[in-house]
Amino acid sequence: QVHLQESGPGLVKSSGTLSLTCAVSGVSISGLNWCSWVRQSPGKGLEWIGEIFHSGSTNYKPSLKSRVSISVDKSKNQFSLQVRSVTAADAAVYYCAMGSIPGDFDYWGQGTLVTVSS
Amino acid sequence: EIVLTQSPATLSLSPGERATLSCRASQSISTYLAWYQQKPGQAPRLLISGASNRATGIPARFSGTGSGTDFTLTISSLEPEDFAVYFCQQRSNWPPYTFGQGTKLEIK
Image 1 (cartoon, chains in turn blue, brown):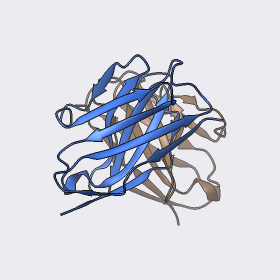
Image 2 (image 1 turned 180 degrees about the vertical axis):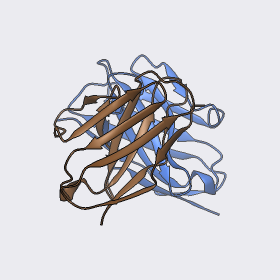
Image 3 (image 1 turned 45 degrees about the horizontal axis):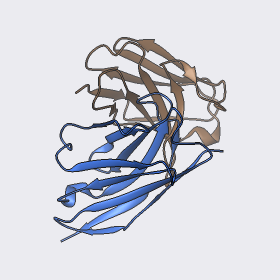
Image 4 (image 1 turned 90 degrees about the vertical axis):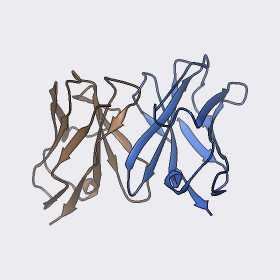
């Protein structure tokens, strides 16, 4: 059974860096899997942030590309998200998601709420 | 960026009735469309991929049709557990993948 679990600080200071990790169990990231981060806020709905393949190849939403990094740690079977220079607009529930095809989100984590403080 | 427009925003129906949800893309996306169900406090769950292929474990009352710019999710006979928010999502033209704004299916 595939299980994804997000972890990281729930409160980030404005202008700081948001860092989250997604621990994966039940499937190997080293297999044919694309790993994504998606966020959801009341004002913007569901927003795809970016993805990484196990090889390290990445794609990002163009409007976020300058502030976002996604990395993978195959030895720990997990992948991570960093968002730099956060503002109130970055407050959201952040989900990690995976699929065998780019853009197919077969599996999702439960989500983690990130609040941005001033 | 491809914009997905879902209609209606809210759909009020009774258990046993048929639900028809629409998703329109701002340009052709072939059949690169998925549908998700989301209940309060939960992550989205994949229902349909490739416009018409049910995901593993999804009941047969859920069906998807369409290609190009117009897509439909149909729930043939609503069960109490089907009342939720439904999102469409495209993976044709990326980055970025994009989602519709959602249709809330509520009990009448």
